[in-house]
Image 1 (spheres, rainbow, N blue to C red):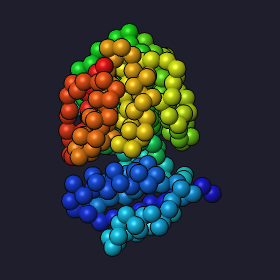
Image 2: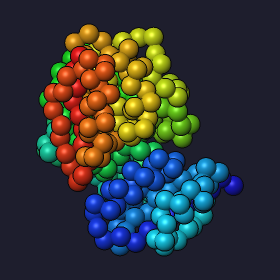
Image 3: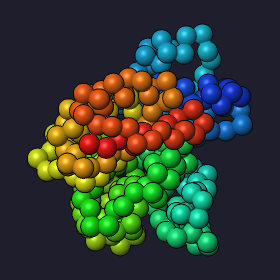
Length: 269
C-alpha cells in the first residue's frame, strides 16, 4: 500500500516553523500542517531520505509516522478549514457551507497538494492577483499544485491558462478541482520545467527559491513583452538573490508584499 511519511517537530516559534517549511520543501516534503505545538510535514514514503532529514535537523528531535494514503486524505479533509482573502476570494471544501461576502469562491477537494490558501505564499499571490488585470490575458501557472491560482485567474477573466506541475498527485488533484469549479479555459500539463514555446501575459510562480532560480532563463523566455510575473514560495531573505536574477532578465520590480516571513515579488518586463 502506498504510504505517506509524517514528521512531527515541536516548535512554538512561528519564524522557526516558516524556516522549517522552506527547508523541508527542499527535501521533497510537499504538505505541512502547523499546530500550536509545532509542525507536521508530509512526504511520499518512497521519497523520504532519513539521513538528509537528520542532517537538516541536527540534534532537534522529531517523531516519524507512516500513514496509509487513504487515511491521510481523511485526516487532511477533516482538518481542512475555509480560507478567506479579505472580501476578494474564499476557498472551501465541498462539505463546507458557501462563504458569504466574497467576490469569488473556489471549491476544492483538499488533498496532499500545495496550494490550499492556508500557506502564507498562496495567500500572498491571491491577494496580489486582486490588483492585476487578467481580462483577455494568457496566463501560465508554473507549479500549479491544487490549481487554485489557475482557477482564480479564470474567474478574473483570463483568456487562457496553462497550469503545469511535475507531480502526478498534484495533476490528479488539480483536474478534480477544475471539474468542481467548472472551468473552461484551463489546460493542465505535467512538466518539469518552464521550457515552453509560448509566451504569456501573466505568469504565476509560487514554488521555492531553488526551482525559480533554476528556471529563471525559461521564465524569461515565457514572459511576453509588457508581461507581469508573480514570484513566491520565497522567504524574506531570498529577495536579494531573486531580484539579482530578475535583473538579468531585464525585469523591473513592481512591489514586494510580506506575510509571516514570506514574500511575493511582482516583476514586469
